Image 1 (tube, rainbow, N blue to C red):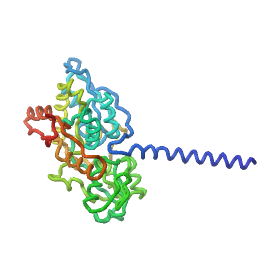
Image 2 (cartoon, rainbow, N blue to C red):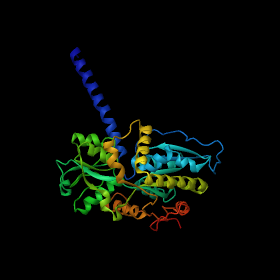
Image 3 (cartoon, one colour):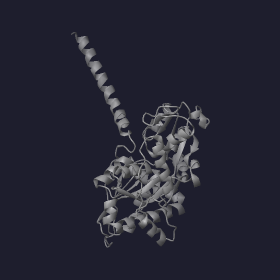
Image 4 (spheres, rainbow, N blue to C red):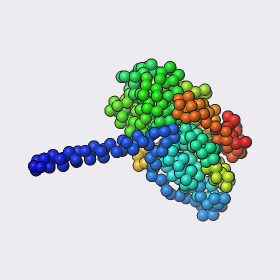
Length: 379
């Protein structure tokens, strides 16, 4: 072969290698997004310990490992951890926080024994509970409601009927927002295959980190997403066509739960109770001081990710999220029914998924009304 032929072969091989390397992250992302509550990429752990007073008394465990997302819908954890409100209730027991990018990796940590308590969405909670036949977790409190919006390209979509034939993103197949969109599409009388996302509306499963760029490039026409992704899309010129709260009775639905390993709950109920005292007091402070709380949550995001949200993103995002102790159990039940209706899961047995005993003990001590479990509590 000639020298020129060798050169062309080398260039072609190099070109193929570059293309393959560029495609690999997309393939990994696609595989990670498959399945109702499938595996997802874990963020680097914030493997550090909160300061503990030297004379503070330890509870029955020397430490408690708490997981959450660097996300506004996890504001209770962001603020409760950063400002020491949860650690204060733990006394000499050390709070050890870790952050995650998605529910499945947090569930994996809980199942693997490297996490005791987690803040997480309803869909991964349901999936994990069902897969373990009710053996791995309990939901012990609510944390947040709302904060989910349908944001669209206003030049292409002006009414809800205009969604037909368009490409709408959700964060992950079978996640909480994906289920809500599939249900909404079904109620419109339109058809979408839940596995492929193809149909009268193209449901495009896209990581929230890349959704704003996909929207900006025009590869999607809109997205049904949680905050702050929704407000990031608005900052890119999008328009809010629908706030999911408008679809729910009382304009409330669970977006974040607090879950616990059943083993840890059984062995260390005093520690779980202390954490819940911390979350209840954190939530009270957030609701009494919304502006200070917004600044504190943003400072926590900056500390975790190196960058705070801009005012044009956090200002509209923050008031759309309701911080609450109530797990809003009836809405989790409804979300599971939507997932069944969409064909993503079989009818689940959710009996015993809640144990609100310690939460209600804390709420009573704080003079607040008890939370209900919609008949899905431990017997």
